[in-house]
Image (cartoon, rainbow, N blue to C red; front, side, top):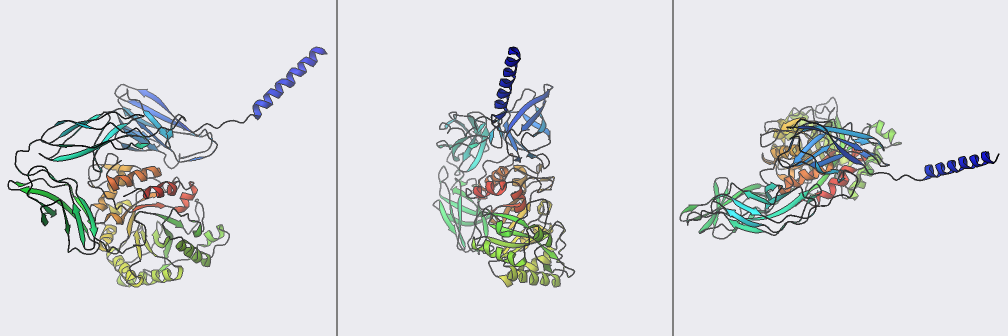
Length: 613
C-alpha cells in the first residue's frame, strides 16, 4: 500500500509538471529563410530557399534578397520573380505562394554559377533571414583619393566602410558612374582635359550609406587646345523660360554655347544663362559646350526642364498616389468610398459603363456591391465623393476596364462621350475621367471627345490613362498616339506594368521580365524619351497577391524604381539615360486589393513619394 501511494504521488507529480509545461506560453519565432545548396557540379549549382512563418500572424507577401560574390550569376529560377542590382539578387513571391499562415512554408529555387558561390547578407522582408538582428546600412566610406588619370579615365580609391557592405557606388553629382565590390574604381569613357568631381557611398540590402567627401580631378591631355567638357548642367523652368547653370570647363575658355539639339540658343561668357521666349508648359532639353580660339570642346550631359503654365490636373501634388476603387464585388475587400485611406491622393472609380449608344457612358452604384455593404445608395456614394473632397482628395470616373466596351469611333460618339461624362461629373462630383479601354480605342475620336470634355469642364479637368504595357511600346500605338495628341491637357499616364510577360525597354537591348525594377524603369523610359513629360508618367502596379495574374512586386521595388527614374541612383542593371525628377508617382490596382493585403502598398509607397526631388 505504501509503494502504491508513492507511485500515485509520482504520477500526480508528473502530471503536474506536464500541465505546467503545457501551460507555459510559447514564444513565436520570427519568419526565416533558409538556404540549401541542392546540388553542385563545379561550374554551377542549384540553390533553394525555404521561407517559414514561425510567427503568429499571416505573412502577405515575401521578398528574399541576398548577395553573391563578384562574377557570380543566376541563370534560371522558379516559383518566384527575380530582380537584380549589381550582385544583389531579390526574389519576390508569385501570386500563389505569397500568403503564409503561421507555421506555413514556401520555397523557390534557382540555378547559379559558379558552384563555389554562396549567398550572403540575406534578408527576408528587410529583416535578417535567420531571424536575428536586422542589418543596418554601412558606415560612411573614407574620403576618396585620385590614384591615376589618363586622357579618358580617372582612377580612385577610398577607405572601407564599417558594417555589412555589399559594394560601393561612385557618384558624379547624382549620377552613378561606377559600382564595385572593392575600394577602388576607374571611371572611363571621359573626355580629354575634362574636370570631374566624385563621391562614394557604400550599400547593402538596407540601403546606402552617407556620401563620402568629394574629390576632383582632371583627365590628362590639356595642351592648350579646345576647352574641356562643362560640369553638370542644372535646368529650371520658369515663365516662358528655362534658367541654366553649369560647372566651368577646364582649359582656356572664351565662352559657352547653349544648344537645343543642333541649334545654338545662347552664347555667354559666364556659366549661366536664361533661354527666354518659350511657350507655356513646354519641355526643353539643352546641352552646353565651351569654346576658344582652338575650337569647341565636348558637350555637357543634357538637362531637361518644363516651362510654367501646365494646368492639366494642376491641383494634384507634385508626386502622388492613385488607386482604383471597385464598384463591384470580387474576392477583394468591399469598401465604401469614404473608407479610402488618406494615403491615396487620386481615386479612380471603376468603372463607367457603355450602353447600346456609341460613346455613351453611364454609372450607378453596383447592386451587388450595395448589398455587400449593407445597402450602399447612390446618395451615400455622392456624399462620400464630397467627403473625399473635404480631405483634399480628387475622385475621377474610370471608363472601361477589362470587360469594358465603350467605343468612341466617330464624331457623334465623341460628342456623346463628352456630354455623358460631363453630366456624370456634374451629378456625382467627379473631378475628371480615366481612360482604361483594354479592348482598343480610336485615338482620333477619343482625342476629340476629351478636348470637348475639357472645353466643358475647364482647366482643372483631370485626364488620366491606364494603358496596358503593350499599348505604350511604340508611338505608333493608338494609346501612345492619344497621349501625345492631348499632351497639353493630359494629367498622367498610369501604364499597367503587370500581366505583361517580358518586353523590350527603351534601350532595345533586352526583354526585361515583369515584376522587376528593370521592367518598370526601362519601359517607363520609353514614354519619357518619346514625348511625354516626366510629370505625365507614373508606374501602375498590383497592390499585392490576388490583384493580378503576373507582375506583382514588393512595394519596396516600386520605391526603388521611382528613385532610379528620379535620380538615376539605386537602379538595377538598366540605368535610364537621364534623371527624371518630375516623375509623377504610382498607381495601384487596386485600393480594395490593398485593403486585402494589410494596406502594404499604400503605406510603403506613399511615404516614399515625399522623398523624391
